[in-house]
Length: 548
Image 1: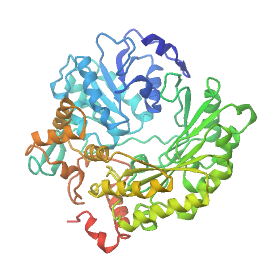
Image 2: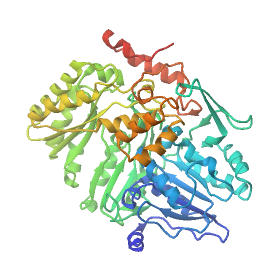
Image 3: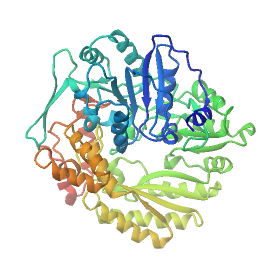
Image 4: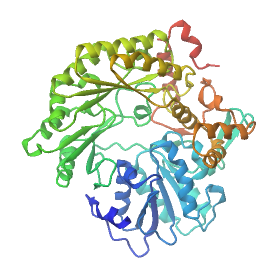
C-alpha cells in the first residue's frame, strides 16, 4: 500500500544521493498523506532537504511513511492546522520519543517544528519542541542545517545553545516565563543566559521567485494539482488578518522569472493548475498572467484560484475561469456594514461587491462564495442587518447566480492589531440570526463552528501553561467538552478559558509572544488599533482593550 502511494508521485525536482555520513532526518506532517502532500509548504521543505547530499530525509504521515532510519538525529514537523497537535504527540510516541522536550536526553533526536501555526504563536506547543523555526523556510533551512553540522556530535545542551544563535531559530527551553500568579497574566519572558538573544526575529524571504509544487500526485486531497505561489502576504492589511500581518511585506513572484517557467514546468505533468496567495489578483501583472494561461495550447487546463480581491473580479477573469472548468469564485467581504469595514480597514464598498457578482455572472460563472465574519470588535445589531441587506441586493442584481455565504466568528490572532480583543460572547447567537434571515432568501449559509472558534482563540492567544491542558484534552478526546473538563481539572494552576478566549487584554500587559518579533513592532500595531477604535460608536467603546 505504502509503496504504491509513493510510486504514484511525479517529482518536479531531482533528489540528491545522500553522502555516507548524511544527517538522518525524519520530516513529518501530522495528518494523513493526502492532506500533507497537498501542503505547498511541506512539499517545498521536503524537496529543499532532499536536494542536499548532507541530509538523508524520510517522510512520515499519520497513515504511511517512507523507510525510517534506525537512529534519526532530527525529527521535524510542518504544522498547518492547530488541532493537528494531537497527531504530533501520537507520532512522537510511535517513534518512542518523550512528548516533552525536558524529558529528552542526548540519545533522542532534536525535535523541530515550523509552519504558519508555530510562526504565529508557538507558546501553547513550546514544551513539545526543542526548536521552532519562525518564518520563511527559504532563509531558515540552510542556516539550520549548517549550524547543526557544527555541533552535530556535541551534547544536546551545546547544540541548542548554538542553534539559538541562528536568526529565526527559537529554542523555548532557553527562555524562562514568569507569571503574576499561577492563574494570572504573564509577568516576564527572559532568556536564561546573557548569550541567548532576548528577542527572536521572524525570518522574511524577500526574493521574487516564490514557491511552486515539487510533486504532483493523484493521491493528494486536490488530485493531480500543481500549485504556484503568485503572491506572498496581502497589501490590504485587514486588522484581524494573520495572513497579512504575520507575513508582511507583500511580495510578488516575477512574471517572466518565476511564474512562466513554473507554470510551464508543472503543465508538462498535469493539466490542473492552482494559483495560490492571499490576494492573487493583486499581482501587478495579473492580467498578463491570465492572458498567458488563456493561450490555446492550455485549453485543457483546469484552473483554480485561491482567493480574489472583490474589486478585481472582471468579466474577463470570470470568462477565463469558466472556460477553465471553474464554476464559482470566492471573495472575502467580511460584512455588509460600511462602519465595520472601516474598523477592520477593508477598503471595499457594497457597490463593488454587487458589481463583482454581476461580472461573475456575465462571465459565465454559476456561483459566488462570499466570506463574512460575526463578532468583529465594534459590531452592533444594525451591522448584521446591513449584511442581510447586502446579500439581498446581490441576489437582485445577479439573478440566477448561486450565492453562498460562509461565516466565521472573529478570533484574535497574535501579531495583529486585534490581538488584544476577546471573542464576542454574542457571536453564536449572531450566526444563528444570519442563518434565520438568509436561508429563506435561498442563500446557502455556511457558518463555521463557533466551538471550533473558541478552541482556535484559546490556541492563538495561549501561553506555555496550556501544554498540560493539551495533554489532558488529548486523553479526554478532542471535543470542546474535553477542553472544559481539562480546565476544571487544572483550576487554580492555569487561567480559565475566559481569560484566554473572551477577555479584552490590556495593551500594557506582557503578551505570551512578546519575545517573538513579527514584521511590525508593537507600537505600529497599537497605532492601527487606535485607528480602528476611532470608528467605534460610543456604545461600543467598552469593547476597547484597556490602555492602563
